Image 1 (cartoon, rainbow, N blue to C red):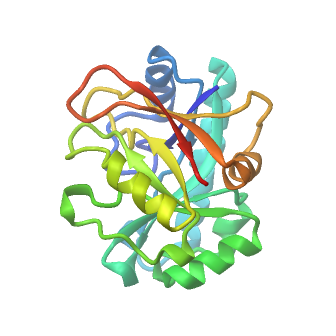
Image 2: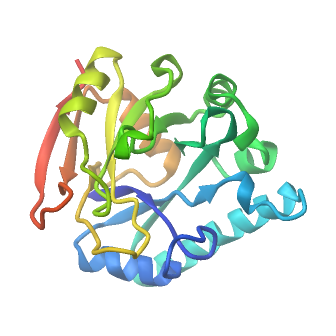
Length: 235
């Protein structure tokens, strides 16, 4: 089962051009079996300081996405892409937590990486840095407070940085993930992580990634229309 671990919908992510039902149809047309809905969670989206209302809206969009996914026979997993105010706006991907995490930490964007990491661990989740090295402005954060790093296949940017991130991940005992960071502003990349079909929720997905010493990824390199399967051996 091929799951894209990084996707957005216009219901939350202002930069995404299409609603979730179209996101699903596009993924299916590219032979992707499911997505992790990792909408942006950032301070810039909060209106009049009302983070509680935004947290509710964020979760409502995910629940609506679940309904759309069931109608189309598709898999949707819960995730978060948080923009870290204290770390120059770096993007971190959260997997494995349930919806109560957003309710408990509605201002997670103001946390330090270390604080966020420990909160996620308390809730059984994992933390992955999104698209490091992209355009030389997404600097790598502290690896001791990460579980993984992402290969991003977004076609607008300068590459997945497969070799560099593979080396970094092995050096720091991290795993690799892969996602399209899809916003409907380019063609839809065919990419993701292959996971067993019996995985049914974000917690099981996170546990699988954390426990695996070997992860099979589907990678579509920027500027190319073909893709390749890559096996990453953590140890």
